[in-house]
Length: 226
View 1 (tube, helix red, strand yellow):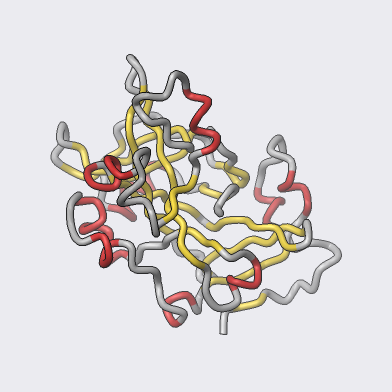
View 2 (view 1 turned 135 degrees about the vertical axis):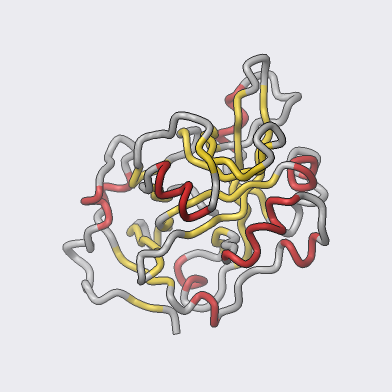
């Protein structure tokens, strides 16, 4: 699963990277995003007839849920079942988004590791969104898929990452689920660096770029896939 990640780019940066227009006040940059936190998402807006940078609560809350608490358990949607799940299928069909990230965290034997592009480029996680309640609170989930290569040594799941060439079809709605949910190949994941980092990230109250520093007890040479 993906239970923690970092997203630190400004609204202006996201507008340029995703050719989108910001329509909501953005959350502060976070190096330790946790479930139910506000996060930036890129989605299609019928009002603006364009891609927009919006703000969502991480953890999709189905419209029938009695309250927002359900979102804490629905931060991830499995790509293998998202098209048929009662909770996720309507959003997968019509309300897909991109979730920009700098990288994500997983724990190996209680030691945190950070996965991030070695060149510092943005990641776009495949996401879905919906609204909940009379105030139409925007909520979202990140899709996950089976991990491959060295990433599988860290965790058996990873976010479904979409390259720029697939952003338009993902955001358009509809389409063939098999093609939309195709994971990246090992070759496409070569640039993902696996970095042991400080244990401070385990506490959701900790935040800041220092969380990405190599763990004092770890070999500081980053492991690169393949």
